[in-house]
Length: 497
Ligand SMILES: [Zn+2]
Picture 1 (cartoon, rainbow, N blue to C red):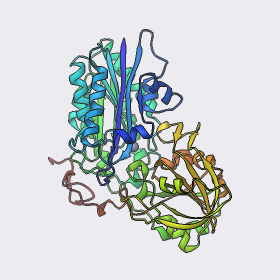
Picture 2: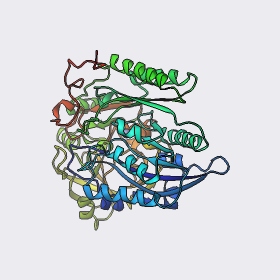
Picture 3: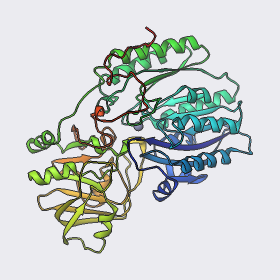
Picture 4: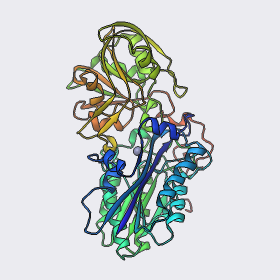
C-alpha cells in the first residue's frame, strides 16, 4: 500500500497586502521535496511529521512528494497558487496511489480563488481519480466549506489552540485513509457551519467556553461508530464567504448520527456565543500592569494586532514606542527588520549605536523607532526548541539576528525573517535570558503561550492596532457571510428557524 504525502498551507489574512509567493517560501526554506520533507519535519509534532511517522502497519509505504508552507500572510498570488497546485498534481500524476495524505491549513485564499483549500483538494481529486482515498488535516483556524468536505474522504482538524495536536490528528487521518484503502467504507462526514465569529482572545482551548465545547465533542466521539467530531474556530481575518466557525462530524456509516452530533455541538457553540466574544486591555493599561508586576516570572504581553501567526509582519513598534516614551524598562521585544540587521552588520558586540528599528511594513500602525542602544548579541538565526511550541515545530530559522539593549534596559531582538516569538530559545540564541526580564512581548495571541508557558505564568493580551487586531469591528468586510454574530447582533441560528 503506497500513500503519497503532500502539503500546501497558507493562513491568508485578506486585510494584509503582503502576498504569499514561491520566492518568499523558498527564501524562508519552507519548500521541501521528497525525503527533505521527512528530514525537515522529523522530531516535530507537525502535520507532516504525523503523516510520515515511521510507525506504520506492515506493507504500508509512505512517499513524501512535495510540501509548501507559506505560514500566515496575505493571499497567494495567482501565479504562486497556480504553480504550487500544479507541482502537487504533477508529483501525484502518472503513478497509482492507494491513498493521498494532504496537509492543508483551511484558511488559504488566492488572489483569484476564494475557496483555495477546496480548490487544491478538487485538483488533487481530479488527478488521482474518484477511488483513491484522500485524507486532509486542517488547522483549527480553518474556514471550512462544503466543497472541501465533499472532495476528500477523511478530514481531521487540530483541536488545540495553541496547536499542539497536529501530528496526533495526522496519525488519525492516516489511519482513516489506510482503513478505506483496506476496503472499509468511506465514512459519512457532515459539515455544520455557524454564522458566528469567536474572538481571537477567546480561542484558547484550555479556557472556557472552548474547553466545554470540546468536551461535548469528546462525548459524541465515545458513541458507537462515531469516528470524529471536531470544531473549526474559523479565521476572521479572511474576508471570504466561507468565514466562520464550523463543526465537522464523521460516522463510520451513519450520516444521521453524524448530523445529530454536528447539530448538537453547533447548538452548544451558539448558546455560548456571547462568552466567545471579548476585548483586551489598552497599551497604557498593559504597561501599567508591567510596572507593578513582581513575578513569579516575567509577564507575557501578547501583541494581538501584530500577530505573526495571523498574518501580521511582526514589526509593529506600538508597544516599544509606548514603553520607551513612558520610561518602562525590563521588557524583551522582538522585531522583524532586515534593514536594521544589515545596517548594524559591521558593529561589534558592545558597540554603542543609534539604531532605527521596526515599523516599516505598511500593515501596522507603528512607526520606525530610533533608540540609543548597545549591541549585546548576534546569531545566524538558526535554533532549535525541544520543548512544546505552537504547531509542534522544533527547528527555526529567523535569519541573521542582532540583540540590542536600549538605554532604559529594554532588549530588542531584531530578526531578518518575520517571526512570532513562539520560542524562548529565540531570545537565548542571542544571549537574552527571558527570565531576567519583567515582561516579554509575544507577537501572537495563543501561539507564544506554548513556548513561554513555563517561564511566564502571567499572560496579558493587549489590544494593539494592526491587521490582526482583537477589535474586529474595526475592519471593513465585503465578502463575509451576513448576517453574522457579533457584527449583526440580531443574527439567528439555526437560520431556518
Ligand atoms: Zn491556527
